[in-house]
Length: 321
Ligand SMILES: Cc1cc2nc3c(=O)[nH]c(=O)nc-3n(C[C@H](O)[C@H](O)[C@H](O)COP(=O)(O)OP(=O)(O)OC[C@H]3O[C@@H](n4cnc5c(N)ncnc54)[C@H](O)[C@@H]3O)c2cc1C
Image (cartoon, rainbow, N blue to C red; front, side, top):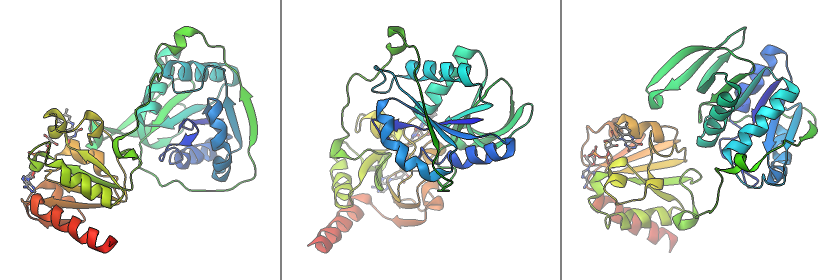
C-alpha cells in the first residue's frame, strides 16, 4: 500500500499537490499495492471531490477537533499513528516546504530515514531513488531503507495527470493528539500584498539589483498589476531591504512555476535559477546580453529596464483602454 499525503491549505489544494500522484501511481503499480491519498484536517473534505479524478483506490481522511489549520508536529504525529495502525510500504508527500517539514518529522519520530525531493523511485528491498540536491544543480542516486519508506517528490517535475478509475473508498482516522503536538501552529495569516501569492500567480515580475532601489519597484508593481500577477525578487533585493523575504525567488526563497516569469535586472545566478526554472516561459529584461538569465530565457529584451518596463506598461494601458 502506497500512501501519498495530499497537501491543502484550509481546503484549497496547493497547485503542486497532485503532481506527485504520477510517481505515486507508478510506484503503486510496480509494487502491486493500493494507491491511497491521505488528507489531514476537517477542511480536507473540500478536496475529496477533485481528488476522485486521479485513479486512487482509497482516501484516508485524518480528523481531530484541533486539526483545523496547519501544525507540522500534529500532522506528523497523525501520520505516525496512521502508519502504526495500517503498515503501508511507503509514504510519499510533495517536496514542498510543508511536505518536507512534515515528513522529516515523521522520520525523526519513527527513527527511520527520509529522502527528500525524489524524481525517480525504483522499489525493491531498499528503494533506489534519484533526488534533486543543492537546489537543483545536482542529481543524486541513493538507496533508502526503513519501513515504511519515507519519500518526498521534487516539485514541478511532473505534470499532474488525471486518470479516473472509479470512486475511491473513503475512510476516516482519528489520531490521539496532545497540546505538545500543537506547539508549532499557524497563529495568524497575513494575505500577500496585491492578494496574489507568488507561488499561485500566473505571471511573476521579478526584480533584481538592476532595479536600483526600493522605489524602482513601482514600475514592476504596475506591470504585475496590469498582467494580474505578483512581484518577486532576487536575494540581493531582499538582503538590501527593497522587498520582504517572502518575495524572494530561489534556492532559499520560493520555487515558482508561473505561465510567465519576467526577470528584470536579474543576472540569473544558479541559486535564483532553481527557483524560477519551473516557469513555462521566461522573459529576461537586462542590459547585459551575456547575463546567464538571458542565455537561458525563452525571450529577452536587451535594454534598460527603467526604459523598457514603462514602455510595456504604456502599451498595456492602451490595450486595456
Ligand atoms: C547559499 C546561497 C543561497 C542563495 N539563495 C538565493 C535565492 O534564493 N535567490 C536568489 O535570487 N539568490 C540567491 N543567492 C544569491 C545569488 O548567488 C546571487 O548573488 C543573486 O541571485 C544575484 O542577484 P541579482 O541577479 O539581483 O544581482 P546581480 O547578480 O548583481 O545582477 C544584476 C543584473 O541586473 C542587470 N542590470 C543592471 N542594471 C540594469 C538595468 N538598468 N536594466 C536591466 N538590467 C540591469 C545586470 O546586467 C545584471 O545581470 C544565494 C546565494 C547563496 C550563496
